[in-house]
Image 1 (cartoon, rainbow, N blue to C red):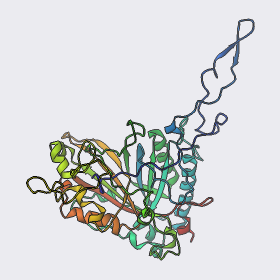
Image 2 (image 1 turned 180 degrees about the vertical axis):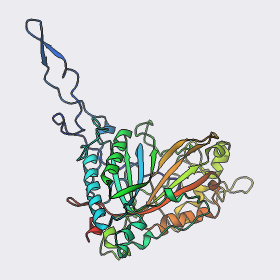
Image 3 (image 1 turned 90 degrees about the vertical axis):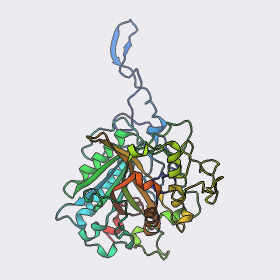
Image 4 (image 1 turned 30 degrees about the horizontal axis):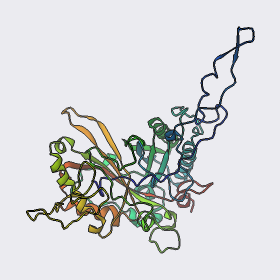
Length: 430
């Protein structure tokens, strides 16, 4: 959990751009004027003149509200950015009779809506005003294609081999109605209303072309909630994501993104600069987990709960000594500890960029919380990334007793749309 499979994104590298002050009513990024805009001016004779005072400059947004991510970028937004406070994952199936033409029109609508909302503007048509007065709040909207999409649109020859269905795993108890889908959309923001506004706009844009297959809601700690930036904790209380790949690493792009044309890649040309997203709803059996002592939890994970440092000592980022033994000659980090099993050097260098959301979907009649992780991981090759690590976990991860994989999906996420393009255009019009 703290190293590979129950994940976290790298330190925030995204841009936070200040918003420009605009005249009233142009976009939702324009806040109302400060006090005085509606006050009465006292005339020279001392009477109430009844005229509104001249509006002052708009109150600036906080740093959270002002954060803005770009839509037209090399890699789609929502992959390398830091964890966002609120998220929605939603999958669609194309409607009966809808094909390539309808899919192209839908992606064109979705891309324009994403561009506008990420810039802090209202949706083009029939905006709901849910996010009125708010800034972009680092909103990102990401689009992907499922395995079934290609048969539905007559594009089977363009389906990547890497999109072949994931194998079965022993920890799987999958609900097929909440798995897979023709199209997948990931929405993230640092404000819940901004995220919901985007979700509603995307759903409305689908119109008659596609229907919702499943939808899930998640959250993370709000940026600025801790005294200093730190790796997030999951609902088990563990610092989670210590060994996540970072964009500053020399081989980051090679591990996470499909190379561009002319690179000898086995992926189709339309996937250049894209990535593959594995999405899993992982339920945490919190009642069982919380019965363990803190020491027993640390033995399951292989790291200290307090600060995420390996049991062999040091700080969170200290290299784990896998051979270190205690006074009795036993391994300090147990052989089945989650952090040991998931290390890239124990999996042929397999790596994936984990960018999850926690979730809580209520408490059942027995008082058991339906809570856990909306696991999202990114890699250039899911067979060498997620599948390699999950197979290793299947063979003896101590954590598997306390989690359950309840839904699953694999999606091909093309590179970002250039100016004047929509996401997936090179596939749908190529």
